[in-house]
Image (cartoon, rainbow, N blue to C red):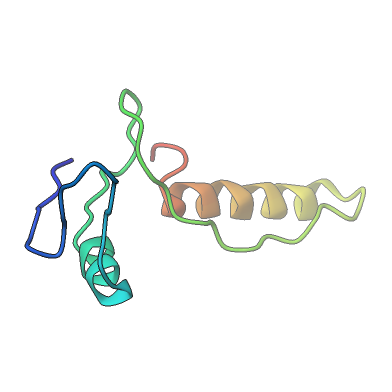
Length: 80
């Protein structure tokens, strides 16, 4: 990750990272974080909600578990 330094970043004996919230917001919007893979750390998105398994019916449980797996795959938590 590289961080661009602009004139809003100052150097002195005291550490001043940003002179305004706008400078911080601009820096934050420019951050790029890689997606996680099987071999690299990164960021994943939050998966969509999946209802709890609530019956002893195998077909209903299979549907719920498959929905959970699909949610995790879509979010990038597990590989497809």
